[in-house]
Image (cartoon, rainbow, N blue to C red; front, side):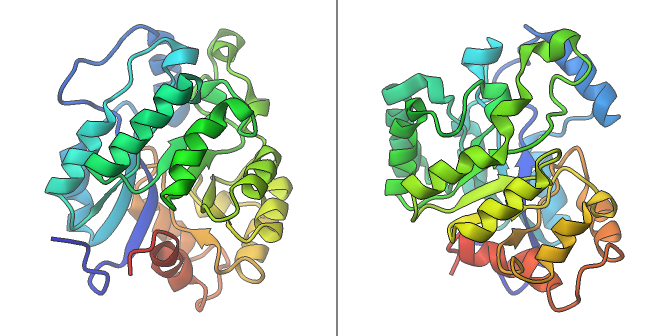
Length: 289
């Protein structure tokens, strides 16, 4: 079983696994959960299988990942294997990405190799603010080398972080780590690996557009915001020079595809560009054909 690309209407490249069915939620830092629910006005967290059932019902495929920030947060991650095995059971809709804390160094690189070879993961997610590192820190390069060697994409959170917003001192999480200009170095050093800048990168939207325009292997996903709030320059470049490098993403469960698509229709995107963003660019970037 695999994704029937002719039947699905879109590929959401940015969804989160928020609940493990194999281990209890680690309540070590409850202040983050409380602020998270307040910021996003939601506390519902579907299971991986519930998410797969939902996307199947709306005829979409989706990329899913967790965030491993055990070093910075001291909180247990959801197992990458759980997502990968769920993808094997839902191969018609679920594309598994993994997340490994870059502070794990060579052991993290070994884990990446095992997840690629034994579990078939298709890419990796990084969140510099929550993981506490600059993306161009050579500490992370052991991990990048394994991912790039397999020709897989690396997806990086960029811009403001809802995680930590409202917590005292922001939970000591540093926003500057997620300035997308740091990805310019990564794109130079790993020119054949797709690099995805996640979200409208407020307050660094122009930096993201510049890096994406300058480096052929860099993409931007449009997750995390309703399209009606997109900066005008993001829509301008999506309609012109970067039309082949923009990717549909929601940040589900924080934003639903229905909400995103409703606002996308009236946000000012050209009709000929919409199919590229919703599906065709992702098919090419993920090498689904």
